[in-house]
Length: 224
Figure 1: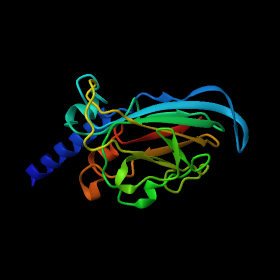
Figure 2 (figure 1 turned 90 degrees about the vertical axis):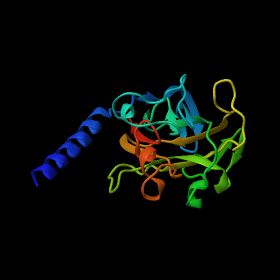
Figure 3 (figure 1 turned 30 degrees about the horizontal axis):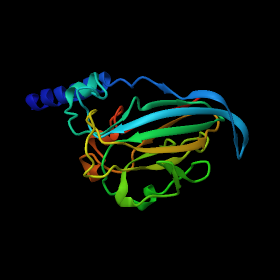
Figure 4 (figure 1 turned 135 degrees about the horizontal axis):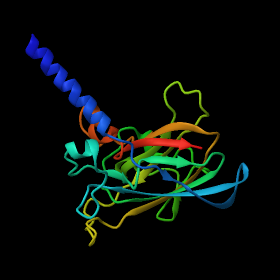
């Protein structure tokens, strides 16, 4: 019995140690530059640039330190340069995403459609679309509220177009990216979360592992 208790204590202690070591990534702030005409009138205009990589490389190691030093990231996709985002309140935010990963058919076709952008579209390599084929989804970028939140409603979900499964890598170790550009309007200040809704992890229905790892495929959004 004592052995069992000691073992349980060691496991619990290890979990808390790893959780404590997993610090939030550095905050990436959207850059405000001028104003833009929107359906809600002239608003401050901010921009945010992100990339999605299918795996780490020697030149692009992905998130490091803490928990990441205890897991094998080989083959784990991740958003870069950070998954902790800060956006200005009551502003138009334009996000550009360069996506380097191949496809995994999204389980729920809802997430192959565009939700919450200014005009209901996303520019995929310059072409505006309201949805893409579920078989062509690599990941999603989905901002939403905490459960039972009393904060202002905030929901944006954009499917990320996959590169071809046979696309050749360039000198940087990745294929030519697909480029997504979309805009949405923020409301009052609040704290939100975002995640990928196209399961590519392990565990229960493939939503474990990388899918819930801060610095990888989920993070926080702070509207200030």
